[in-house]
Length: 447
Ligand code: ADP
Image 1 (cartoon, rainbow, N blue to C red):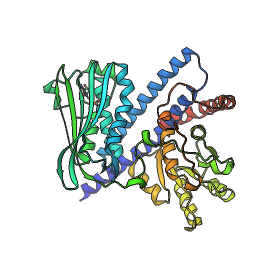
Image 2: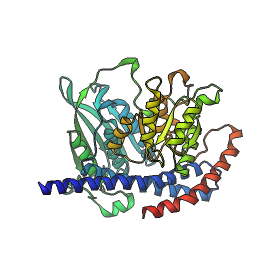
Image 3: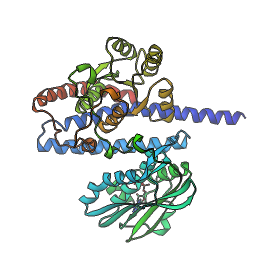
Image 4: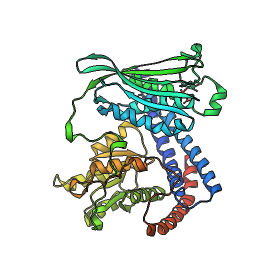
């Protein structure tokens, strides 16, 4: 009994350590990635742009290694919990395929999505996790295919009433894998060819994470492959079919979701979002991202200030960092709900550096409505704001106004009214100064 207690305590400490590491590393990384994105929208000469692009690739790479390690440890620690939600299979397959289309095309490889007709449109699954596995397999297929075609396929393997076996396959015409090595592929840190890895990067954790996730979803995963001819990575999930909810249903993919619609009203108050965030770099990142989405941020440093701001003005929505001095996001949310007393309900969106399911629960039970993790992306923020923006303030999105257009941060300057350009550049200068002032301290505090 003593040993079990000790083991449980060790596991708890491990996940606590992970939660802290995740917070500590993601916060400055959020700053780094945010700054790179902002910097890429300022006027730069060709050489600077090249440097910035390398910086972007390296920072992105670091973040994805970090995410891999975190995911892996999270699953190991039994901390990965699955959501049961409405997942739209066809949209998901299309979206993942689309995401890799440019990269595949660049290499002269064709990529196609093929969802068979008998695949139900909506199933109960953790969309994010299915997307993660599928993206990983498609990413690998693109990495290891020099010519030919990649097919991303979804089909039904077996039907039994409401439950059926949904099969996903990623079929490539790439280099293939030696049969002797195929068994080891799903083990952690295994890479078939060291020299190829140096060329392509990666931690050797991708497939191990995929396999663990699929097992967690009670599914199976495997590969058939022939060297020189290509590979077929597949996974099968037992899923429940959901009935369509018709017009009430929210679109579940970003590509189909219109840009969060800021109200057209000239009334300043109605498009102002209250942001409670103590970190000056994150404050600037959120301010910029919101401004690009057509909102204005009113920023306060902690929960106490958020409460008094809400006494002054009726904001349509609040973005609330969870970890703040004086009064943290959870405490502030609880107090806001207490004061509302059921009379009205202001949408509260928690922003946290923790990617743990427990954090989500904690935020929701404190009275938050939804939850986003750092680093904040414009696409995710737009989606969550649109979901919670008070209906009375929305306007119909104009045609051509699609979220897809801001999904991929590009080096190209964003479309903005000419008069906004100058202040923007100045602001970015200020942001860079804040960044240089604070990041070294944050990096040191990690070490
Ligand atoms: P990493 O995160 O390093 O890419 P993975 O676990 O995803 O690690 O993949 C492990 C190894 O399996 C890769 O380094 C590669 O050698 C091999 N591999 C994965 N997918 C493919 C594929 N579609 N074609 C050929 N080899 C592959």
